[in-house]
Image 1 (cartoon, rainbow, N blue to C red):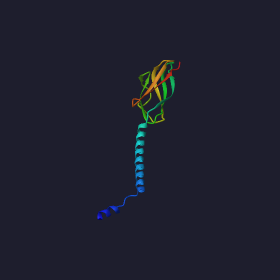
Image 2: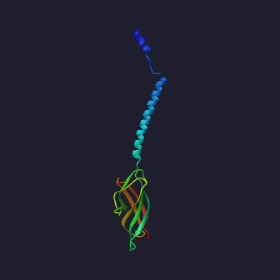
Image 3: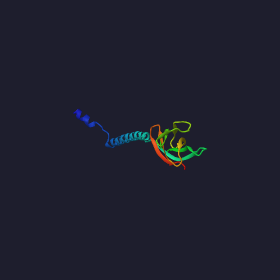
Image 4: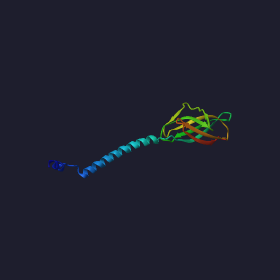
Length: 144
């Protein structure tokens, strides 16, 4: 008889309080998962992107074109490093002072590129980043 009385006198949580606790735990876990996934997506969403914004040609005293100034903008969301520049798929050296060049997002740099240019010919410029991502070709014609 005592055993029966013990089971009857036991109290439990009301169903309303149990539902509130379950909802609170679910919301807390979903907020934690959302914050974790958000941090992961921001890390993976950083992208390298280069925009070619313009070009100027420099003529030597004898009328030949030996230099062009290529304007490049980092239009991506991450810092990028320019490792090399190619003209018509041939790696070239420039007269810029430091290489590699590091660009913050939205930063612009002018690269002075030394090459033996022919008047009126088409040239395809490709910029390769340190992550080995090629951007281009940016095709322009040398002045005639």
